[in-house]
Length: 131
Image 1 (cartoon, rainbow, N blue to C red):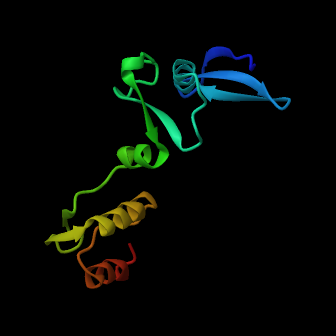
Image 2 (cartoon, one colour):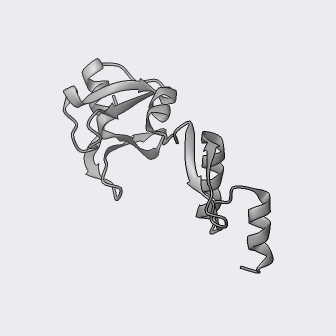
């Protein structure tokens, strides 16, 4: 029989329970703890408890559901539209790129790179100015 302590509020605004396992203090999300008590079984490593309304403090059973990790991750990942219209930073021409290209462009912009550019030619013209 495991003795749980809590629930405690973490710095990220979520609740968790603590317990000792093999002599080490560990924790479990409060929602997962509630679901395990309700189902009277341990959730597997591939199962997570999802808050339907997105509020991690709303732990009412009608707001909780069990999902696989893969399904939960795919539901929460941001996906760009299949086609994205952008305006070239250099020549101001409108061009279309696909989802994967958009993801790469956004990664570049987070690293402080200028753009977007419609072609290598426009990128080269911009970079020869030493900007």
